[in-house]
Length: 167
Image (cartoon, rainbow, N blue to C red; front, side, top):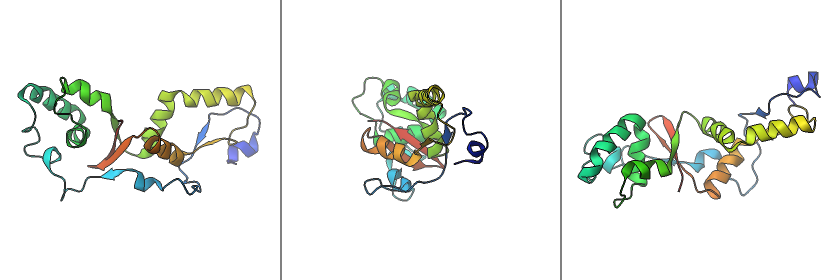
């Protein structure tokens, strides 16, 4: 239990999220094995600086340049792993699969909790049922496991960030 919970056990506080790695059950793999890594020595095609747009149809190149300026490495990974050559609209195709680029898995997980409405739902439930702070904890590692195994998200570590894509 956190120190605040010991001092004020029945006062409602925001749901707590820890960076600690809990003991994982046998069916959950450690976090670091859940994302893909592009190794500069073996990465080819659009992930390289030169010639990244050469394989694109002419009608996609202007939009591709705008997307690369805006999303950098995230867009290059999209080209490398997710781009459909027959896509009618490269921008629409990109945004249909790209979730975002993050400095850490924790940042992505917290944004996801917010977008899914889970933080508000848990805080509301804690308040309604007078559940003390620290009684419930988020499992970041389990969320990542769930996202990879059941939602089939792909997470790439590239150029100092983590880039998340959905199927």
